[in-house]
Image (tube, rainbow, N blue to C red):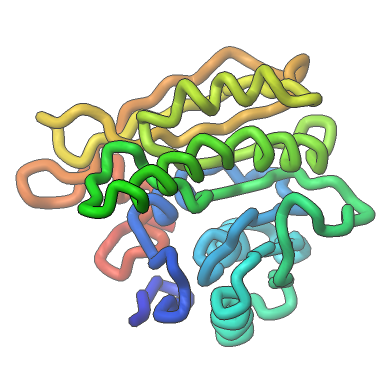
Length: 241
């Protein structure tokens, strides 16, 4: 399996998490101005790292961290075959335990392996494990990201709407408290409630007035202008810079 973007091609057949609208939205929505050092936590096939590589200055550095060996190898191959093989570094490691870099990140981006509680499963034990994983991941990943942020650095993530309360709880319970500075509620179509949330966070004390946004992906069987504004630089059929 693979996904053709405007400037790069992604293979994802060896990754548990495939290329998704979640990542495409997050990678296009997050602000990248002034980002010199960025990290992608749980990079999978490398889509977010490569989107950042496309959107940042030539001298920017992106560190992509992935625990799974097969996904790490696939991300490495995708980066090697991209226009930015020297800009992105893929490392097989646990995001919670890797050795601290000598610099601090202006941006940490993540589409964690959450499992939305609303997804049904025929296997109740599997469903319980999925929900447990979702509840456990936000606090340690946010704490680790906050630890590695530059003074005015930001964390960007995508999550199910159902996870928002747990994320907010996690921002207050970690050693370096975080504040949400930008939030986008995402609907699949106008008549349905938001199912995703995009967030940007920074350290408490560096926050600014919260920016609230609403985004609908499709309307009248076509992508909305708002969706294409963020993803058009990557979708072959989209529009954008």
